[in-house]
Length: 261
Image (cartoon, rainbow, N blue to C red; front, side, top):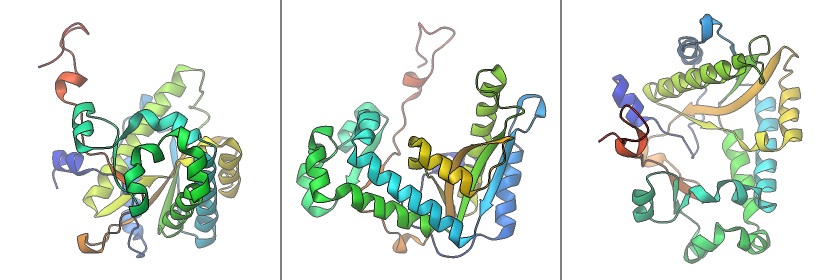
C-alpha cells in the first residue's frame, strides 16, 4: 500500500476486532513507526505502554464503559459534541465535517434527531440508552487484544511553555504514524476517549498503569486485527465520518483573504 492510499484508507474502527493477539513483530513495527515521527531537536518525548494483560484490559474497559454511561446520562456528551452530529447524507455533504449517524436500533430510528438532543435526555435515561452504550463500549474495549497508552516525558512536556506545544505536535504526528501503520497491517484502532473527560476516571487509569511522576499519561487506544468484511459487526448506534472538506474550504493562497481554488 503506497502512502497516499494508506492516508485515504485510514479509518477509526468503531466495531469489534478479531480475538487474535497482535503479534509482537507488529507491535514493534507500530512503535518504530511512532519513533520516526518528527520532534523538536529530536527530543522524542513520547513513551508508550503496550497492554496485553487481560486483567488490566478488563479494568480499563470497565472504566471506559462507566464513563460512557455517565457522560450520556448527565448530558455532557451532548453539550460538547452536538454540533458535529449529522442525520442525513445530504447534510454530511453540505457540512463536509462531523459524523453521519446512520445506524440506530429500529425503535429509535424515527426519533433519531430527538435522541441526539439534550432535551431528550430524560427519555434517553428512561429507555436505558446511556447504560446500553456504556455496556457496548465496555465490551469493545475488553475484547480488544491490545491497548496502547501514549505518554509524554515531563522533562519536555511543560504545558505552560512552548515546549509543551511542541510535544503535543510531536505526539500527534507519532500517533498518526501508528494509525497509518495499522492500515497497512490489516489492523484497526480507536481512541478510548471517555475516561479523559472525567478526571477521577483518568487518574484511575494512571494508577492502574503505574505511571511514574516523570511521565504524563496523554491517551489510550484500542487495537486489533480487522475481521473479514462479511464478519464485520457494527455497533447498535454507529456513524460514518468519511466526508472531508474541499481544498477551497481548507486552504488559502498567500493570505487568509483568498481561498485556494
